[in-house]
Length: 220
Picture 1 (cartoon, rainbow, N blue to C red):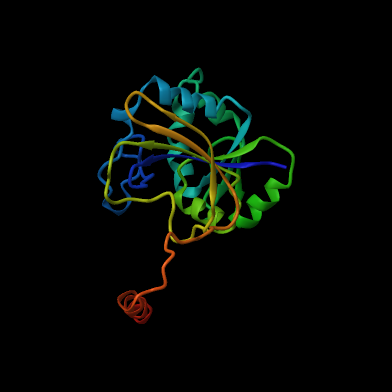
Picture 2 (cartoon, rainbow, N blue to C red):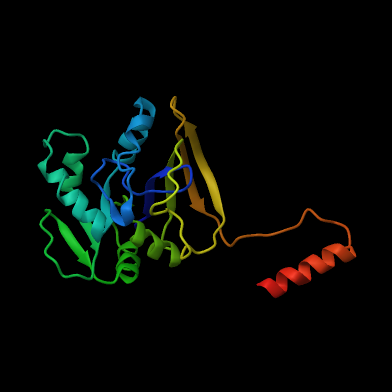
């Protein structure tokens, strides 16, 4: 059985778009590409190194794949990230049929079915990077086994977000947390079942509260 790990660099307001450099992903007029750099330090650099230290294959959406394919193959082979990225299998969610030039790339024309099938096989962890649209599909289908979220002290206001409306409501268990000198936080979560609800209230509703509840129902 293979595990799907969703690893993401996230702003405080949940944006994952274009963390690496200004030209990475200007989709939708996004103008803060490269927002991660000022908040990086040796500690969160170590988190990233740890992420790639264990065996993995990459699980990517088409847009992220194109960004990576135009970058990592052209980096020096001794680069600590380029070497494993160029070597591992890249599973790519795509319906375009466009050629994939990066070595060891495999198309998944039905992302949900393809990932579900891969999870049943033996092999290394399936690790996502970026790939916002693909993440929404995986979350909607309950296919993610671990979220490894690195949150940085910046508010971007707009951009592609980690958790969208298609995410299946899920309770998460925090299995690890750490903080870097520049204020980034590492949070590792595992799904822990359906969302549980409750109430801090103990009194019977008074007329004002009853009227408020009825009004909220009418307003949808």
